[in-house]
Image (cartoon, rainbow, N blue to C red; front, side, top):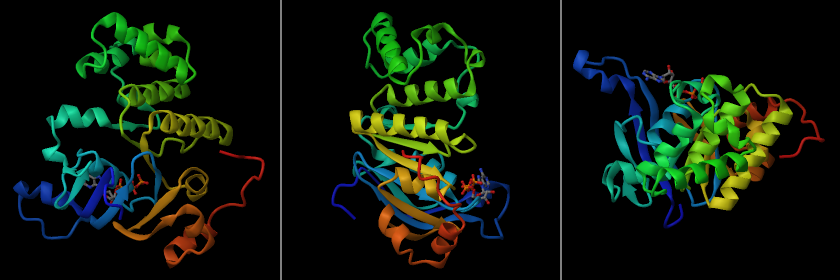
Length: 269
Ligand SMILES: Nc1ncnc2c1ncn2[C@@H]1O[C@H](COP(=O)(O)OP(=O)(O)OP(=O)(O)O)[C@@H](O)[C@H]1O
């Protein structure tokens, strides 16, 4: 554990039943995370891998403060989430999220221009609408979309274009940490490669750290410097991607690796 990790979870337990305890006592343990210790340093791309139901999305949501910790803590820049200087607004500027298809998170009644300029004004990154439009237009171009997209509504875009809008929105405020949850699942290999290249470039340009959640170990291997393997709400293995792949210590990791199809050597991320 480095001395100053950007993000840290310490003994993180999430029990969804504990949240519902007002409905009555929770008899069965429904601990989805059972004491997760994890750290992410500034600018790092860290993979979180595990099979369906292992708790990856819960961990991601808890890192962003969207799901409360039942026990343990999440620290961002050394502060418990609730104690971050400047409060939730200041913290949220630096903690963003990217979805696979952000249709559900893009307000269908707002144009892309409104969706992108609003956070710039809210967080004081732009001082007026004109400046906000300029920043939003530049970010759209950066993610490979035409500026004309500003006047469109989310349903007027393809799924791939919406995803790029989602990436633009997450990167717009130059956050220090971005969570990407299964963002390339279900995409063909060349689309995956383009999205991952864009994400890597943005991380390098802006110094963003990225937590990259995926059930696909081959994508994690190619894309992430370090990884955590989650099984049943517990981290069973962690380390540099190449080390874990070369010498997996845990039987669960070995099983995940042996389930990977033979890679296509022509594909590079
Ligand atoms: N809001 C919730 N309330 C109650 N249980 C939940 C909630 N969200 C997730 N769970 C349960 O927590 C467990 C872990 O779910 P989670 O989505 O974190 O796993 P995952 O590894 O991301 O899975 P997947 O890859 O299928 O998305 C599952 O058993 C799920 O049913």
